[in-house]
Amino acid sequence: MTESDIHKPDTGSGAPASGEAGTGPPRRAGIRNFFLALRHINEASVADAVRQRFSDYVSIGLVIICIFSLVGAVALPVSLQFRLLPLIFTVGAIVFYIINRLGIVLSLSQRQALIVWQILSAAFWLGVTSAMLVILSCFYFFNMGGRL
Image 1 (cartoon, rainbow, N blue to C red):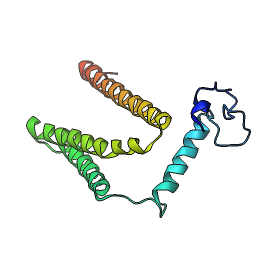
Image 2: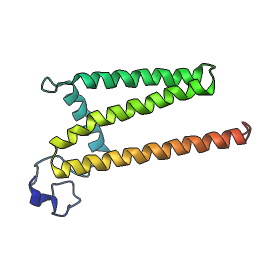
Image 3: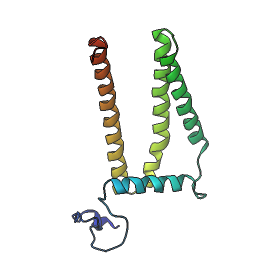
Image 4: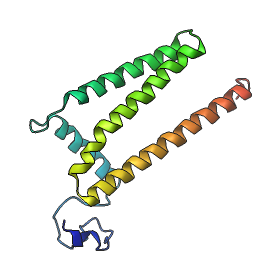
């Protein structure tokens, strides 16, 4: 795709906007593209040409540790201060994970970088609204006294 192709209107038919039939994946195939993208990511993650850095393994390990510490904070009878520690640690691990991954954007074209940013923004807002939904559900459940 050239820079001029970016500004051409999308035909909505799934074909590339440039009018070249059969070149590249369809743009707006919805859920089908979601599963194709997951398969592509899975194949890329096991490809020999893709090498992971040491910090990638560190951040994966931090995510696993955070999951276990959060489960422990909820499942074990500990004081509130000890319940907040794993949450603070998890936020730090997530920030570390994001910082290590944002360098990838430098290797992308401007169009690709914008698309990645839009996906990151959408994921952020999904997390914020999901957290609000969980909080409001908990308030509702506890204010109802367990009556449904």
